[in-house]
Image (cartoon, rainbow, N blue to C red; front, side, top):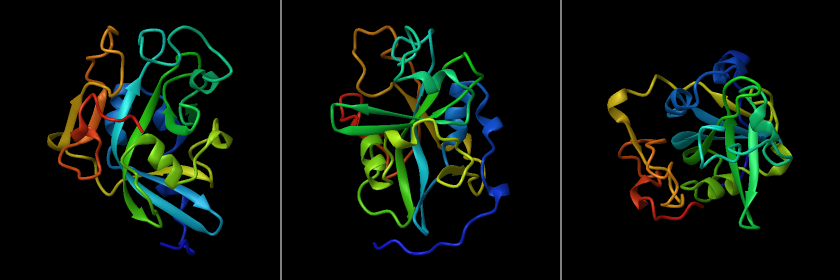
Length: 203
């Protein structure tokens, strides 16, 4: 689908950065049903968030921030409302929403989107959605209420009955955090990776 001009939403439609300065697991569930928007030239791509994973800091052995701050994970140690974009397997990017207060690292990995506007290609996986929206390390640290990459309020809060939780995908089964139910998704969505199970692809 060719990209074309799309009318912009007002600032009131964007989630403010302050919203993300709450507990990561709470915000992970809140993110379901929100819209991730990406400006590319005069066009705006949009996709509804349907699957995420929550990652903490020193309390979460599966987190990039578990041991210490590094150049790679530095954004996680800042205040919530910024993008944390990392590179894996020498070929893929993954997009995260930083949550919490500065110095208390946590982030939400966005795993899957339901395409809404001007998105071609698959979005049922963190690397696939980054490829479809051209998200890479150049956007690491960008504030998520600006004009390049942002979150929009969903039409209505996601009913608790539609939110399911399970183990995060692709973790070492020997990890003490392997079975934590920190993956949240919209039950029944055709775009979710939840149906592939824990042994499914991360990308």
